[in-house]
Length: 340
Image (cartoon, rainbow, N blue to C red):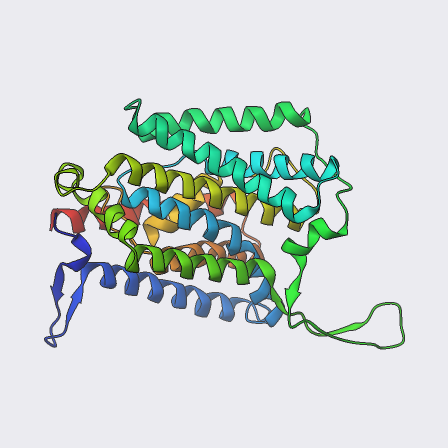
């Protein structure tokens, strides 16, 4: 039940670096190179406002990527996170419309996402359906339910409190100028970025310091050996899928709060961004390999790439092509690592 992350690579200087750390370092260098390249291309790229914009854009991808990483480490995949994101947002929006306060309503949305993840885990473990097919089915079901509940129409007029999570910020400094609008001295740290950091730290702690984290790695490395070692494999997989669904629900609340309206059509193709973030960050689609810090780097690579290409006037279609090429290269590197 060897963990590929611990396999060492000899370097010319005699320093030894694990393959997982080498992959993470490569991704980090790629991120730095992208930042440098885009900063030369546009003077506005390194401004505080644009940096905060990147944080906001990356927060949703990062939350989805964390849940996806847990599932991928177990040897599975979750194609339903984009649709679950939309359904969770719809549940939250309908609850707010029904008079439920914003915080409990968002909690209901997260519970709805966790329920979808629980169903995914049950179908994969108890019905023995491959994760690809099981989560593909949930992707269609969740999207259909979201559209049915809303009649494919957005839910608006949800109140100012609904937009605080997605648009609020910590340490925001404004200066009164005597005019209609105050002068913004410092826009503050967006709440979604703070939330992403907190979730990433908690998930990393869970994977690296808790027994369930070791069980997740063991399940993905060698499921049969893990079972013989006393690991409750089915329960571990269900936990990973449930947490992935809950994080998709949280991401749905963040995204809909940013829009200050609930859009049942949101989240289309987000599952691919989540998978890309995890794979670029070093998670292996074969299972048993992956970490949260790598996924965060992968998410920021996607966020910086999209932001920089947008500022350069590159079309969204070309952006998809570029990200697709990066994913293929990352998977190819993963295959080389597995052969070693």
